[in-house]
Image (cartoon, rainbow, N blue to C red; front, side):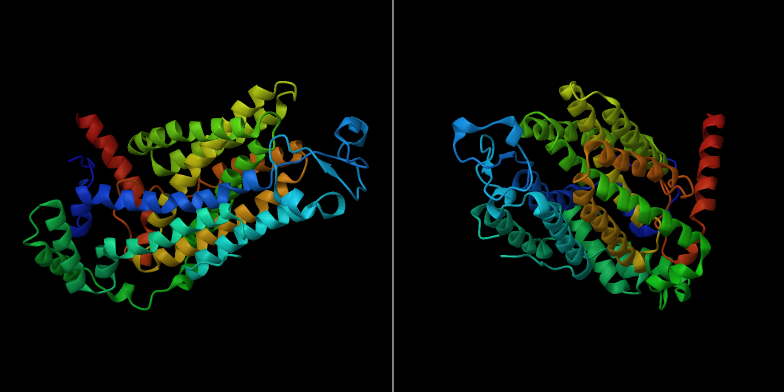
Length: 415
């Protein structure tokens, strides 16, 4: 089994998970399947509310004139249904003074996902359309995954549930067909030699008592916001660009696959901070390139926008890994919930930004991505370091990262 090299681990649970096991692949598969229906919902907006052309003051197709295209005011529009027969815009007549409701409705869907992140439930309207029903049914099936996975043994140990942590580790050993005879003794020994005083009564608000942790949380908050706004915003941005919307979205989706595979390998090579900084910076650079390309080079603009979206997607993946590694186990879920809210807020503001002219929306996405790259610099490196169990562990992450880097240099010199 693959093993992380040049890393000294004292925690028996992390020693076990340092080796990729069948349970890792099993757990990853369940998480992967649970994400598919959620992305269907979010990205369906590209096809539910695409830009639609209309002609005013005529109901006869042979009287259509470009002079009457997309003019306001218009009481009886004739819609161009060559691509989409029905959309949110045509169904509710959202043009002229009511056109802002298109981006508002998109933001409201993201607002629903924000509340979902807060209360871990579903808040959805009754969309009577078969399309929305088909997207929603698979989500309910995912609830059954609760009985297919086990509680985090590190969380159990850090919250003094030693017996339960040992039971989970023993079950995992049976699942992986490895020896787990002494795992309970190892957990008890490790727990007894590490004081639990700092773990008690720890909650999210303790973060604000430490400048280093406040800095980490502040930087990660803006980066999460940027990643949420950038990925979903650029996805919609590509949908409204000139050319066939289906082709544009297909190109964008196709590029995400090699981007995901590349990210898996780069995670083993690059440091967390370097990777996140690079993907944010490249997202911003490619978006700046897009707005500088002339409009008549439509295909070139689409391709560069899709590359930009690929880097945003890679940032969106790595940021969730970096965020949880910066904070101790007992409040890690609270921090993740808080940062997820910031990501959802980014999604909520993406549709109003896309309602602006392409130049201004592109500039906004580009500048925010570059800002996200800059804010990665103050963050500590977390690669090849044990996950923090206390606030003190989180405060000393920067020093640990420096020590690990120095040890790595020493090893390479000796070799």
